[in-house]
Image 1 (tube, rainbow, N blue to C red):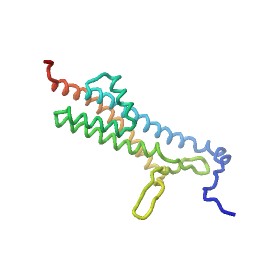
Image 2 (cartoon, one colour):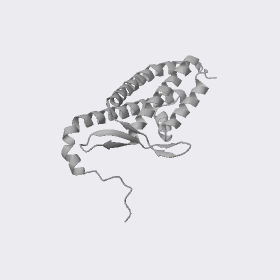
Image 3 (tube, rainbow, N blue to C red):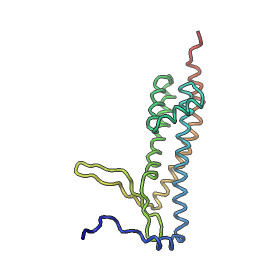
Image 4 (cartoon, helix red, strand yellow):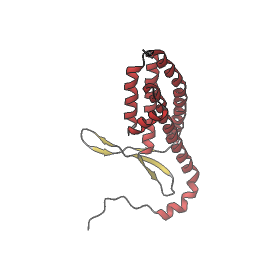
Length: 190
């Protein structure tokens, strides 16, 4: 008889029975994850307006272009390439690059929580995440890093959400500057 390599099946009845005692913490963690995901998504969609201005097109056309590109990386690559050929003000170009850099940092955190397995203990408490990312070293392949869902990690999630709120405000402050700059560089019709 061959023994299974599968982990032991959780005792779902025991978890369900004790889950109410850990519901508050689980709800807190899930709310933090929800805040991260919705803040990130809102910030990503703000780049539609950047694209609209850079392409000098309608919001609908910019949204269509944005949605046609199926990854965030492709969308940001397009924005960065358009910026290179349209933005003549170095400080404005740097401001956009900084916004994108900060957004990418928040993307790493968002991806960490969107693309992981959540490990729960016997009482249903979320104790760890395990990354779905394969880590390849010179000598081996490892399946995802495991991280505790401790107080430090929860504080980090709150900080990242606050950072994303600031990014959103900064994009809103950037948009009129970008629009004004591109209007000032337009060539009058012949």
